[in-house]
Image (cartoon, rainbow, N blue to C red):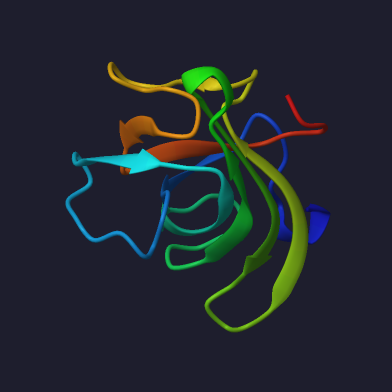
Length: 116
């Protein structure tokens, strides 16, 4: 992430799942699996429109997303270590359960040295 000038404690604002339409304030129900997010507020050399590729988990009704790769708008691909939940899982909203976490359509994604 050195070439991207993106180190802890920097963060990005992301739309969690580019395949789900809606407004930033909307909520969605998420389940385990691969996820593609899009940056809506960048940092360092990661601009708006960058795609993040990772995996989403919903254990215990909490949300965990770990991104391992990003694609800049110019097509360049970089390995990354970026997480939603700077210090661990994000608590799901009321009504969440394992396998079906209700959460905001947007989140902060943090540069991390290792997975929380």
